Image 1 (cartoon, one colour):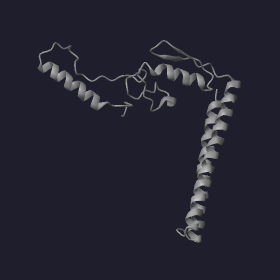
Image 2: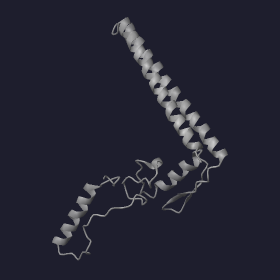
Image 3: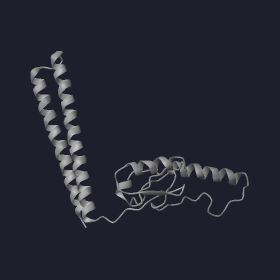
Image 4: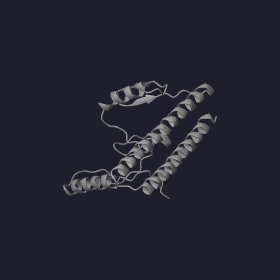
Length: 179
């Protein structure tokens, strides 16, 4: 059924070994000592993936170094997400305002801007690759036919990636405008 996001088998084994060693020394242990525990995804657990059932946090591992809390808070404040974090020294709390129609439109503009940045990045990679191909041809490592073939393949890949960016951006825009 794969109902667990993460199984920390190495950590569980190490903890079980510690309990076994303590038991061998005759230490007083509780009745559940060494029993693996399933933890709901809404809790922060040191160095284990935590998503709190949100796709935004997928793959996120919560920091447990209290010194990093200030840096994380400053990064959130520096971003233009429009949210203000509050910090109690242990946890950063984020209050997300209700998305109004105006805020949704602002978010769509951000999506469009980021999609355009991605398109430009793809085109820059194409330009750089084309430059490298031409250099190979000038050095005699690539024939004219091979250059033409490689440029056509490069153009095809560029169009595919730009189309993928367009599809993802359109999907995200639609998602942002849903009420």
